[in-house]
Image 1: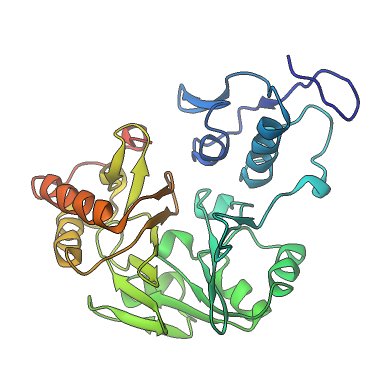
Image 2: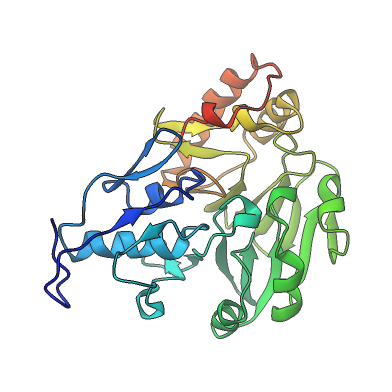
Length: 299
């Protein structure tokens, strides 16, 4: 059992039964947390400071606060978010995932004129002030209806424009900008929206500088298959439209980072990403509609 170096006491981390199997803790602490019986389970206690930091990140991101340190309430001083994904610091993982977005990940992406927020964490004034202190947030980009819950509130607090696709407009009817059709649209220089109907009618990918692909629930990296996948088991709108969106994306969509709302993030050379998308498109051509089944998601 690990020792808390601040007090010398044994650590007693745990994950309680409120867990909704959103995968967030497993993404942030992959060696310490696994999926078991439809929820996350702690494999063992942390062995060093690095592993303790992973569990702290998981605890501050968990939408149900199910990841517990065993030492009382979480200390806000241990909150690592926003968390830079690489040394460039151009994309920040926001943590503080919301139950109202099914525990989806959200991001800030640096642009020449400020930041773009892609989907949102849970709303609190303290978090909004934290993001405002980083510099202007000019746009809040919603990848689809499932992640729209806090969009208007963050946009108003940060003085940003709220974006959504017309296919999911009823989830954010007061959006400031409405994307239409299936063609790419430039949001700001170098930041392009790629409508991607399938998971929902109004799903969108946002790609920054042909490097960062914010894919919502349309594409993700699966630890199970070791590949780029679609959430075929939870496609609300049309798996055939999802396949058509993939076909349109071939040769057009270029990125190095895959940054989904649900499922793992992955960095790879652009050429590899293109190859994997082409393979995925081939696999999806044969998919047919099936009942939604959360237990069949290949995390």
